Amino acid sequence: MKMWIFAVLAALAVGASAQSCPSTCETMKWGTCDGPPCSCYLLVDNGVKQPIDCNALVPKCFLMKAEMYRARKGMSTRSIAGKPDETAIVDNDGIYDPECESDGKFKAKQCNGTDVCWCVNSAGVRRTYKGDQTLKCEKLVETYWIRLQLTHKQGPTVTKDKLKTAISTELNKRYQMNPSLVKEIQYDPDARMIVVDVNKVKGDRSYDLSKMAYYMEKDVKILPLFTDQSRRFTPSVDGQTLEMENIVVYYVDEEAPTITMKHLTGGIIAVIVVVVLAVVAGLLAVFFVQKRQRKYKKTQQREMEQM
Image (cartoon, rainbow, N blue to C red; front, top):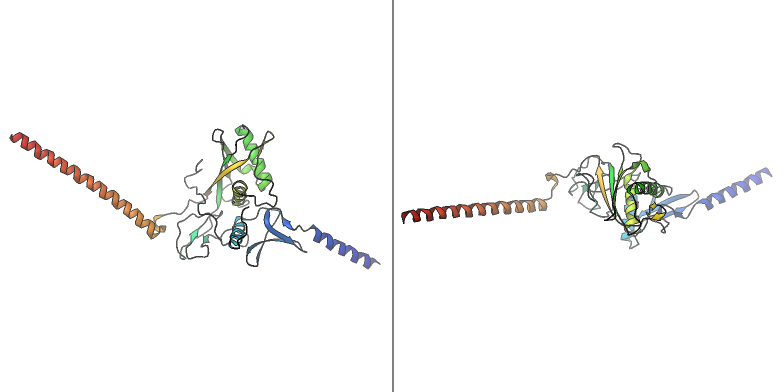
């Protein structure tokens, strides 16, 4: 009798476990969960299931691979003032198919499946000129400072102090980010521009700033990556919601970008040489014209004296 009761309880436990496994992933709308045992994954290639944690933001490298896979399959990928430092960089290259480490970090060297390669930071943003397969990327340089340049829609008038509290609260609530990382906020009410500086201490690896920035870009520019599509990044100030209409993200790394002349491609060098030669030729032309004019004036002066 006891064995029968135990068997029934075990069966009920298994059934409850199966029922508790959600079919969708809260932090990634393309994610799938099944079981038992319950596990969630993201398709990043044909038959390749990348395990993910649906209780946390998914690493940016995995998200980009999933986007590229969906783009190749013709599936929907819509989910998509000023530098804070002279070394800050912006992601102007757009999405590519990255190489990821097992924990979701970007590999330092990226080639997008071609013979053209470049080095990236921890946010996957290119920090060198492009080269060939021989390009050396010694290590993955960490992004420790991100500037979010936001423009909000026409709406309520807010104060800078209340804005900082509202944005810090929303970053924590929506992207699981420690609000203490928000160091400074600047606000231009006429331009409706909000500049948010998010910094961590150099050497700190406890939080990946790139995940927050990528999820926020999708929230503002296109559609959320979260399964719940009804919400976006909307800080609340005095009970009124601020809706964002544009965002620019600047990345500052622990080491300055290693963009030097030795990494320039032949085409870029050729353009520089042509421009320099053109400038030199122009200066020489001006010099000879002026010299000729001076010679003419002296000759004319001697002729006048003789007369």
